[in-house]
Length: 326
Image 1 (cartoon, one colour):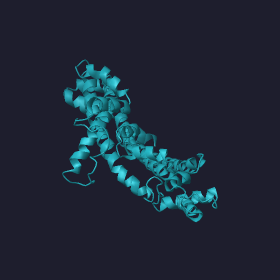
Image 2: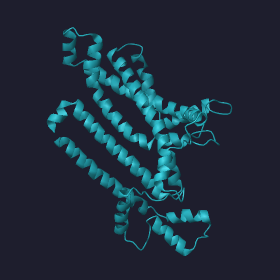
Image 3: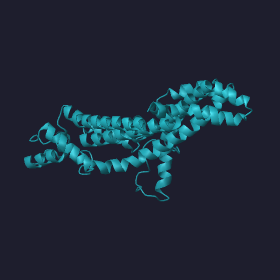
Image 4: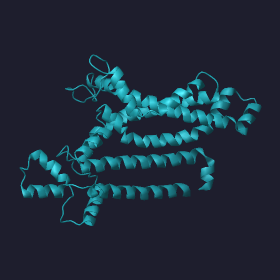
């Protein structure tokens, strides 16, 4: 319990530091973000309207930096992430709310599937060394070293194009209205196939390699020899003794991977113009949309910290030595 409380205190401090940096970094970037918004209106706004925009976006020069910082925290506690420049006058929370399901659906499902398949294949490859599955390890090593976005570009070049079943961009067919009906759902699934495949192929290879190497290491331990000497079945030794102990690093990595689901695979979403958080962040950087950038960074930071905490809890439950050290 002491170990867990220390970790929670550490993550709370880390969250404060991340949120503080999230406030100061955009204000240190040269340029005036209001100017990018005014350019859309071709300078037709009055001085009073411009000042109102500065107050609205928390950039009022009549306030000190410390007062802006306190006001920023006050807005966060009230769930107010500000108003987006790019999608003005839509609030940042609404923009994130529209994009988050796309990222969770694409990256979340592929992460879970790749973890389950990769871990299962890694158990078999590590336990049955010399088998045909173990012989695929050089190929998995190669695939795990290839960036997601490069696989995406190759997939578009080879599989997408005029008359192809696989769309090269977007999240659904233009003209459709997002809804749970027989028109939108098939279109959304069809548009997600290529980006999902690129993420699945590369990430699953990493899980296979990690689990296979841990299984090889664990198989040489004394307690595995003792389990065999007791006459236990091969399957029970493999699953209950070897795989259970070899699983710890993968469980920790999976918890961290869950945190990065929210951030999505930025470059994959850019390559496929997929309407997730990563693509929105790319648009926000190009438009100097500081409120949207801050909101997305905040969501990603919180997700990663929660995932790290879940990894610590998983270790606490699976490894008795952690409980003793706490």
